[in-house]
Image (tube, rainbow over all chains, first blue to last red):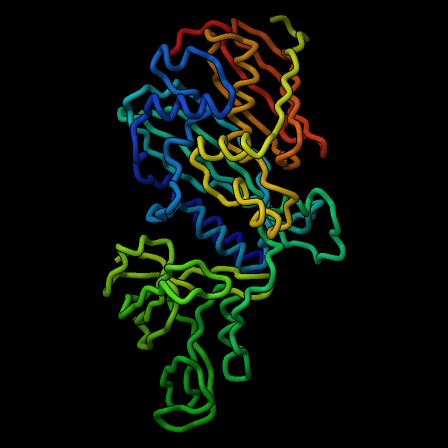
Length: 312
Length: 130
C-alpha cells in the first residue's frame, strides 16, 4: 500500500470504533497476583490483604497465553499487517499510558475492548522512516464499567540497510525486522512475478486470460480453455473457504515451526489457492470454515499470503 | 511528600532470571523475553524486559516509597532504549505536583544505554481504595 492507502485503512479501522475481545480466561486471582508481586520484587502487602490486583496488572489478565489463539481480531491487526506488507516491518513501542479507574477485585473477570485511534506519518526517525500507530484498550468489569484504560503507541519503521545502521541502540530496539532471509523462497519468473508484486502491496492477484476471461491459478503461460498466451490479472476479494487441508507435523521444514496447517482455499472468484491457515488453533481448523487472506512478511523481501479465520 | 522531594533510588540487577520470571508473570511469552538465540537472531544484544514489566516496576518503585495506603491512578511512560539482561535498571523520581492529596511523581528508569522509561505516576497519598 502507498502512504495514502495506509491512511485510508487507518480511517477505516478507527471507524470500527471499540471492538470487544474475549473475556479473560481466569478471573482476577490471588495466585497470579502473588506470582507477579514475587517476580517484580514488590512487597506491598496491600493488594492481597485487601483482595485487589496491582493496577499495572490490568493487561496481564487478558494476555493470550503461550498458544495464542487469535480469534480475537482487533482493529489493530489489519493495520499492523498492512504496515508490515508495505515494508514498515520494524517495530518499537514508544508510549504506554495506563489510567486506573479503580483496582480490579479478586474474583471479577475483565473483558478487553480495543479501539484503533490514530496513524501518523510517514515520519523520519532515528530508526528510519516510519508510521506511529496508536490504539487504546479498555478493560471492563462485570458491571460493564471501565476498570482501566491503556493508550499504546508503536513506531512501525522501514529498517535501514545493515551497513547504514551498524550498531546503534536503535538497531537493538528494533526487535523484528532484521530477520535473516527466509530459507524457502518462491520461484519468481515471468509467469508468476505479478502475483508476488501483488502480495507485497497487499493484493491477492489471480491470473486471467486476456482473451476469454478465464481465471487460472497457479499462474501459467497458456489459457487452459482457449490456449491464448495473452494474460492479465484481477484482484481477488481476499475471502475464501477452506476446501481441504493437511496438518504438517513431520519432517521439519527450515524456517518453520511444526505443526502447521497447509490449506486449499476456495475463492468465491472461482479458483483454489494453497496457503497456510494461521491464527487458529489446529483443532479448530475445519473444512468449509470461512477464511480471509492476511499477509506475513517472512524476511526483508518476501511476503507470503496466508489465511486467517474470517466472517461467515 | 512535598514538591521537589526526591524518591530514594531503586537499582535492579537485570539478571536473566529477572527478565524471564517477570515476562512469565506478566503472561508475555514473546521469545525475545526468554530465548537468547532468538533475541540475538532478531538483532538484539540479549533478551530484554517486556513492557508490562517496565510498567510493573515503575508502579513498584513509587509504591515502595509512597506506602501501602497510596492508590495509583495513572502511569504514563515514554519508552526508550531496551533494558537487556546483564544490565542494571536504576530508578529515580521527584515529586512535581501536589494538590488535595494527589501527587504527581516524575520517574526515570535508566540503563547503561540511556533512558529506558521516563514518565509520570499520579497517585492519591492515602486514598480509599475504591
